[in-house]
Length: 309
Ligand code: UTP
Image 1 (cartoon, rainbow, N blue to C red):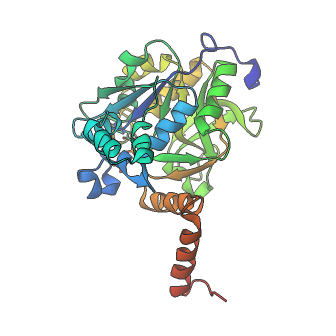
Image 2: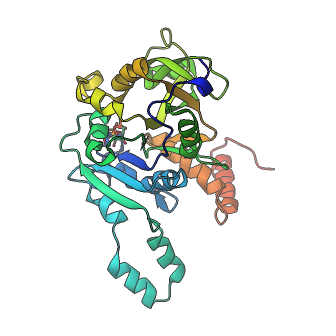
Image 3: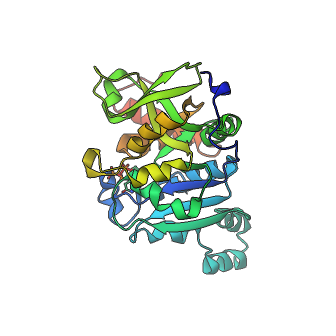
């Protein structure tokens, strides 16, 4: 069945709500994450969560649901109005900075915070958003997967597909076969370079048994049916309630598409991914690119990696 002829899952509705599961422990960034949530780590001057929020707003979302835990006040504080700071910037005539502080959440966009009382897994975190989402398709964005694209953001691309087909859509990218054990891997039918229907999803398969090299990354557009499936999903890998397990059941009932997005993804949940993103954003930054390029050349030549004429 081609994606364009797929039966819809209850109307081709606009995607208005995005869930940001940010209640994980972030153990890979300890000791920093003892006090700073992983999502607040910056790439240049914006925390990861801001890039994720900007992408969701660009995709048309106006309701942002943050699933946090009781230690992550920093995320809620970041999106709250900073009266004192705004007053000080205004008095000091720092209007450009004032605008930066105010534009963290544009007018007309609302932020809702939901608590996940125990870190029982990504699937459980998504389920915590159920009372706010209700009965409509919605997006899930994992902020530590940072996706950079010159054109429309990854979620915008996916929302277009979801809205025109009525299907659930999952972001995927090709990975080297040697890395399949780090990802959810999908098997698809009728894949047309960009998208195809998923008929199986396997969590972290070893390279020799992986059904493909198309890996799931942190963007999903899901039918609300996923909530009922999550309610009956038992803990899987690592004793956590896995979103992948519920999606595996969903795709037996409804069309779920794998979408190979346009853009570059940085895995900012790992040290090297955060470094890579910082370098790439610096090289692309209007005010920083020349200095960043020079600095990198100097560092590489000092280490004897390159020779500078
Ligand atoms: P990760 O697997 O990256 O876990 O979660 P983590 O705790 O954030 O980081 P490490 O592995 O300990 O370093 C993937 C996404 O799911 C969220 C995380 O916040 C992250 O966005 N998550 C995970 C929850 O919100 N709740 C959970 O119980 C687990």
